[in-house]
Length: 393
Ligand code: ATP
Image 1 (spheres, rainbow, N blue to C red):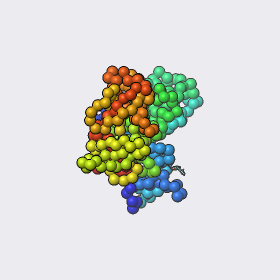
Image 2: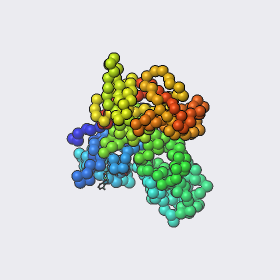
Image 3: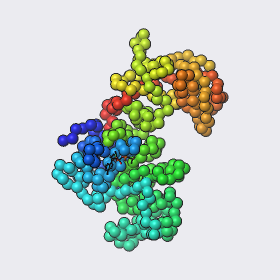
Image 4: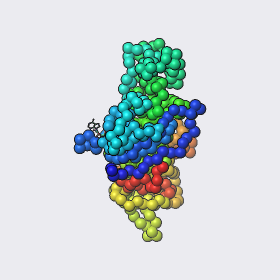
């Protein structure tokens, strides 16, 4: 038996599904391991994905996201472990059973659009249905339904070669959805699109997934994409899940420095532990000397960092009372519509990011002397390799 290196990641309680009940199937992975020679791509993964859930695999290049996905669809044979779809085993290393790719009812959409340029949009969607042996009328109805779902109903007769990148990806999506897969795998499907289109398609994709009730596993290394799309995000590193949580929980409580850093936390400072004369826990910012009290436990372990959300840094024009106060100077003030973002220079190369409602703090200008205050309850201290506290289910 493989050694379990990650906690068993259970599916969340069933969410309210789409009106038609949906056709998504649950996915269960146990002890999933995949090696290529001496390289370990996936270490020992235990993961449950609920029917109709959108699970995002997030992590840096080479952490094993695509390999995990390829094992689910059957394009890679795991070295060890078991995979079930809808409660039925599709792979089991111990009994040497493996259901072939075309019988797993798993759809895939890739980064490259992978549609046939010599066919029309409608023919692209119809082709796999013809291969499946569906009747002409059934196919026509399915093509119409899915093109409507992705907002491409007016493009049925257009040659696929005469589409924009975003339209091609919609067709690829329609083609996968038309097959009514139990699980849809999406491997960085938006990464070839420009930023604006990517943002729009992100919402459309989430909306489509909810309406169809499809189970989706989505691979990305873009944290904002992951947070926007997912029911839960699995952050991976070196073939393992480091943390598995709904987006808000992940954003608020990254379990360690790696996750916080990968999520793009602006204020992440190396610190060392200190204790006040009265025994209150605190940390000193390495290389600066600023001591911050924390209302939270300082974990054991190395590589301690203070993690402070920009929205928890209060900025004042006059020295405020209270704890965790420091003087500085506004280095950059950016107006972002609903909020102001400030970079506050505290000296000795320490810059703190602050986010304030625009109407309150619009008066602060660059080079102005200011004070910051951080509520001790908002100072999180993270260790380098800490696992999530408690159960992540
Ligand atoms: P990316 O975001 O760059 O696509 P990823 O997280 O999807 O990365 P994988 O593609 O799953 O990572 O790769 C995980 C590890 O397995 C990497 O070190 C990679 O080099 C290795 N790997 C993947 N496929 C093969 C293969 N066919 N042969 C040898 N090594 C492989």
